[in-house]
Amino acid sequence: MRKRVSGAAVAATGTWTDPDGVRMPAGEVHAWERGTNQTVCRLQLSRQGLTRFPHVTWADVQPATGRDADAVTSVCRRCAAGTGTRRDEKPWRRENPRP
Figure 1 (cartoon, rainbow, N blue to C red):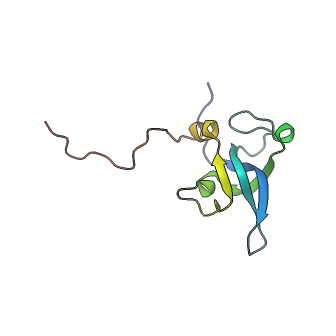
Figure 2: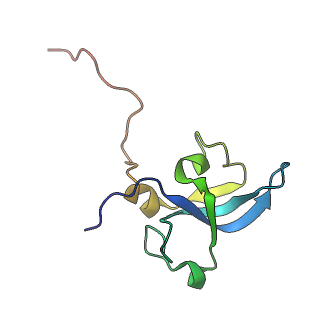
C-alpha cells in the first residue's frame, strides 16, 4: 500500500499557453511526484505521452477550484484518490445532529 501523496505536480495529455506565455496543462491530467517517471496511478509518463508541468500544483488543476484548469477536460480518479480526495467528501459538516 502506498502512502498519500502531498505536494504533487501535474502531468497532462496536452498543453496550452496562457496570455502571459506560460505553458499550462490541457486534456486529461494526472498527479505526478517530482523525481519519478510515473504518475501517482502508476502510469509511465513516456509511454503514455504525458507532458510534465513541475510549475503547476495538483490543487491548481481541479476544475471546481483550480486557477489553471481552463483547458482541463478530465481528472484521473485514481490520482485524485492517491492525493487524498474522497469520492464521498462532503463540503459541509453537521454541527448539531438530532438526538
